[in-house]
Image 1 (cartoon, rainbow, N blue to C red):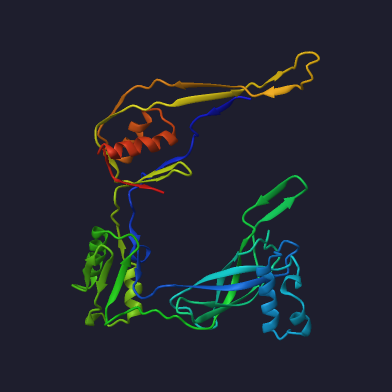
Image 2 (cartoon, rainbow, N blue to C red):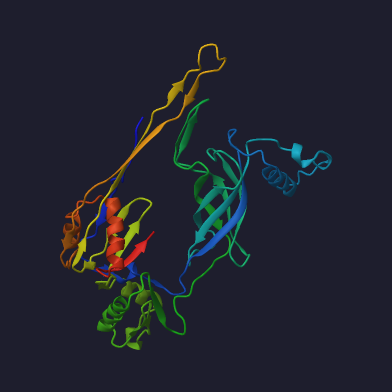
Length: 368
């Protein structure tokens, strides 16, 4: 059968809409009001033959039983390798993120990920697992049934699977035991951190705040804006932060082209422009054909028939014409100019990279 190696037709997306008015709370966070990541090592039980038989999992199960007071002469006399030789258990890593204002007794979701050779966590139950922070303190405890959101069906020679079966979630599966309270003010000041640092956006935020409270806000740099609550405001920090968060601005964006070579996706921002350039792009077409043939031995030679491989390969380089791309000042103009080349989306990635190297692409090029 001939095998053809050609470029795949993939998706190209151009962002053409101008940035709309957005709330300050959608582009900033409050310094000190940050989340903290938690983690813990746990054991999932109740698996229907899809767990692990590894010594690591067995030892975890034995340690769990010993902590529960199930230490007997049997566990002391029999080697660990022969204890709990079961496929109903799996060792997992449990992770969660505790919010800055989460109170003791409230619940949060946890993610459970398999660490051994278990085939699936479907139907499993996480046993009581302490969740620690970076400081080693226990901030929450997790336990409950896993939600996988997938399935697998297999026979002797085939297997069909949907979604990842070795990772699951437990909604409200953790109870917070220790609070990690954030600080909304520091030395009487409120600091707003931009999610996407930009000098002009920081200036616009400070300007919006100063229009209501004169000289209250200062853009420190591209990533932060400091607000000193004015005395005449007579509002608490919570009220002031809520009020500032509802103010609207039109954030500025950097001219940027993002390329994902794995999926072939190209996204161009609104401010992307190109200078005048001459571009030519050709494709290489390669075809290979396997044509094996049989070799017969001579009569009475005592040999056997052999299959000899034979491959026929041809390469054809398509002719291409040179196209002059005029100066373009909008994303729509860029799209029309590049479409004039008649290239596939995969080839378009190479064109963008070449335009950047030639200095004709006036934008930041990010390759994921």
